[in-house]
Length: 112
Image 1: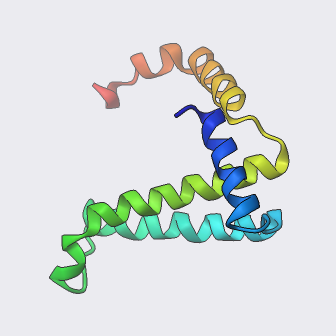
Image 2 (image 1 turned 90 degrees about the horizontal axis):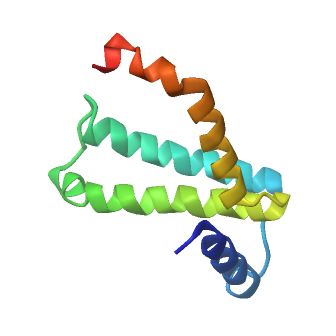
């Protein structure tokens, strides 16, 4: 599935099952909430925090995938609402990073 397909699929879902988009500010707040849920799981899976019960740890990897998908879904909603073509935006961003960071990362001793 391409990013263009993702944007179209989300738009179709929103306009049929979801009825309509939440406004941009509401979706921004929802995005922050979803990113926080990813951060909570990352802190427990890869950081020093522990899960409250072993049962929660058992499904954590599946939960992480689901929370990341939630982040992507809301980000795509915002892109659709604001007229951002994510394919073009990502390509431009990668071009910018390539030009800016080509020598920077290769010369970074911390990355060796």
